[in-house]
Image (cartoon, rainbow, N blue to C red; front, side, top):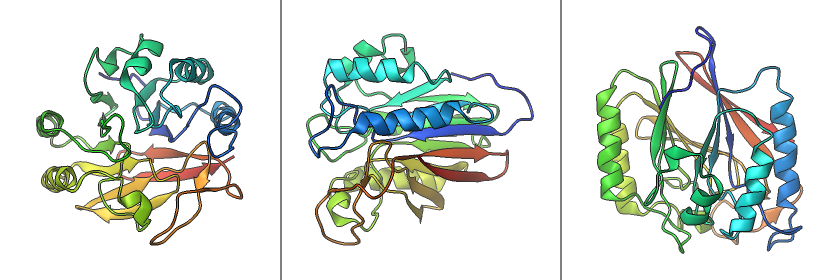
Length: 264
């Protein structure tokens, strides 16, 4: 798949993560997650120029229910830029596909992984979700597909989006429910071998986190719903309501990737 855009213009990709849209007023933590997403959408719509893509990198809704996906669909209709949806551990694929039936890239069954090319930049979306579990993995068929997609365009700079980080962030509660070690090791071998991978862009942790991994940037996008209280080491996962909803803008100029975190 490819997305047309004006030649010579930097590629800008917006990333929303951990939206946790609910059917009612608040989620299980008592947070008005819908309000946070509305603020992020308003900010995105007010940018001087729209991004080339909006990637929503998982935990799109809170309980995986059809009514939540219908609400999410109605909210994202206001964005008016090409949309790339990805599941997270709170999502269920069947109602997601049903609500976004026009999004053919999601496929008709199985895991949701695909790629889009934007003016010489390849954007790959992986599906690390095991439905019914908080942690993730990458199945063999998906890793084989990834190897093939990377191998067919070895000179094309590439960004990989996935929900679960494949490496430790230092927040041990979340690191225990990241990508399974075996899958992470296989993914790491692919990233190390395919040098065009510039970054892996994730979600799940509800905090902005960066580290180097296998020669590439590993970055975690903060949440449009709420940020998790900072835990370096052990500790519970709980909202920090003093920190505002946020999203990221990834700016690719043909040579360098620059990421701006936008708090709203």
